[in-house]
Length: 288
Image (cartoon, rainbow, N blue to C red):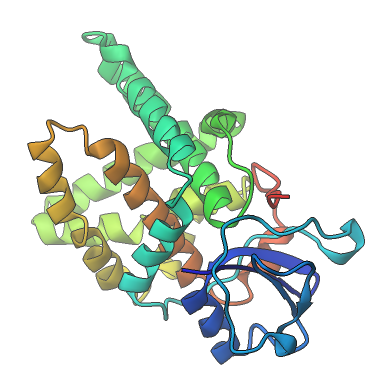
């Protein structure tokens, strides 16, 4: 599927698949005068000059002059994108780019296990889980926003270790307490808190309770959709058992990329400008 890049209000976005770009046009987010680019073009052109939209793409666009673009996180649709299209976008993003996400998830898994050291390992896992969750959110948000993810992002959560750890502990306590009322309330609570670390990645000034409240607000009306999205990976997980777990090397990055795409989609359309006012852990840089 074609991969497109566009400039909207001085901010560059991409790669965006053809279906996603058509959604933007239908929502009025991409206008006839906005610039677009895909493989086969020698330069950026106004969207209205592209006949029939679109041509398959295999490489990145030429760099824009700094005066034309200000990198920023992408905007959401408020949760209007179907889950099938979210997973399709994740696959398109990963196509030809599996190496770094697989390496990142593998390193994350090894470190999260505490090196497999008896007794000490589980304690280390709990202590590091929060900061690593923030680092994972930063990595995959950067990836889906068309930025430059790197392995070092795994450790950016340690810049605000207290908040990251406190948030992880509070979520564990709250989910446990809700689970005492039967399993379903616990699942609902876990879904409500699912966006916490993405929010912390975009605004490191959030304290644990503020991040939890914001996640609950963001997930209003979207918990069932996230649950259904996660169910889409159940069959793949069962197949991974037949590969003795080797298939997880591909499934985990696929799942994590899809969940990051889900977070980007449920945000209100005006969220990107608000994020720019915060203090993210990492300055999102577009690929050149």
